[in-house]
Every structure is written in structure tokens, then in C-alpha cells.
Figure 1 (cartoon, rainbow, N blue to C red):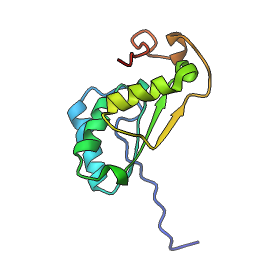
Figure 2 (cartoon, one colour):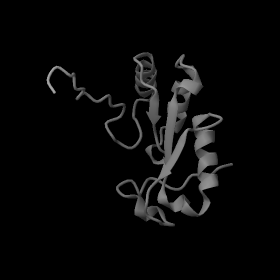
Figure 3 (cartoon, rainbow, N blue to C red):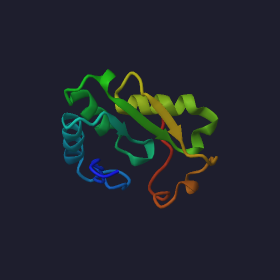
Length: 126
């Protein structure tokens, strides 16, 4: 099929790294993405940026109901996904998310989370 445009460019906010060293740049990137027409925001508890992502969603100027928000909880929450959801809602500062997904393997300890296991621990939902 010739003549049909194909999009091959990706918009990356933090290049897949865990966390962001520049919260202002991350927030500005998310707001810019919203103004450019992006309506899917994908984050995760383990990225340690949910507060920044939520702030950008709330202040970006696009109505919340027009944005699809996906977040993920790690495998140690399989036994209590409602608690994981409460933490993400609190950290995002949102009333709801559109999709909650998770790592497919079950684990109860932080060692299973990979390269950041020495610096990352399961959060509390006060």
C-alpha cells in the first residue's frame, strides 16, 4: 500500500528509566504531549514519578475525562491490588485511573524487582 503515511516516531518521556532526575522537565514534557494531542498517559508505581505525572495531568489543560491514564503495580501487590490502587491514586492525585495493570509474576519481596532492589522498597498507603 503505497501512499499511506506510516508513523515510526516515538515520544519518550523518560526513556524507560526508573524515576526522573528532572521533575520539571518531565512535567513539561507531559503537558507538551497533551497539547500535541497525546491522550494516553502510561506510568507505574515503580517508576517513582506518579506525583509528577499526576500534577501534569491536573495542570495540563486537557479535561481529565479526555485522557486515558494507565498505571501499574508491582508483583508484590498481587495479594492486595486494592491497596496498590489506593497508593497510585494518592500519588497521582487523581480520583480514578482508566486501567490498572501489573507484573505477571508473584513475589512478596523487593529483591524480585530487579536492578533498583537495593534502593526501592514497597511504599505505604497511609
